[in-house]
Image 1 (cartoon, rainbow, N blue to C red):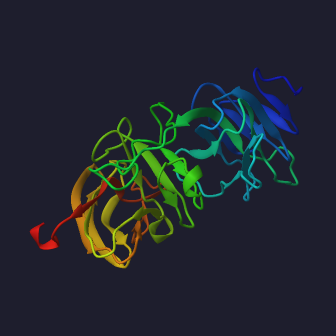
Image 2 (cartoon, rainbow, N blue to C red):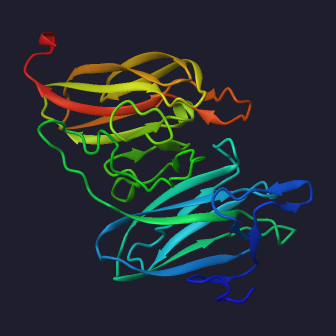
Length: 328
């Protein structure tokens, strides 16, 4: 294919234009949205220039699927970029969805009025045609939520986050680990674990409150945290909702919540059909900065035999200062 073969995109390396239903050996390649996708072979790259607002934060959502290579990964970057090594490297050998396609999110701050977004396969396989498939790509402006008197946490209801594709088969958006706070696709929160979390919406899942929530899909390796300013000796209450996403994730679940050295375990027995319960953790601050963190105690898998990881849903997280703990 020539460098300009795909409208609005520039390509280089071994790029294939794949039609849904294309057969590769014994594998049938399905495209989740529309009829076509691209496959990035060895050292292949697609990129596009976009006008943005300099200084604003953006999240990029893209759908990808693994084909024949086991160690497939994608490198997502933006230029110009004033920060060295500011790129996203996505290992995609773990598939989180039931249909083989996952949507991922990555965030950045625009350093110019015109930027170039690149998606690159850095792999070198024996078969040059092996490589991940890329389908839908979307860019969304991220707004920085503020702390309020009603909630000392930023974005505690998770309403601000990456774009979720509206297709009927949407399985949410994977937010990878080790993303720093100021460039998180989930503003205010740090994914400080080894594995990803999933961002879900009320159009496709059961969400306890509002339109967005997160699903803790990888046990203790799937943790989300936020550091908040507190006053030493003052009393606080952390409240939150725990439930399931109505996605066939069944069985006993436990969410562990932490506020500094204080912790609570919240049990939830999921029938996989939606529902939630309220929980809270009261504590007295011992520092001027308190780390609020959540993770799921156990791993869970969907009951559809897909082997897809799932877990408890977390939503409506609030932190309030109170006068006396025993009045609660």
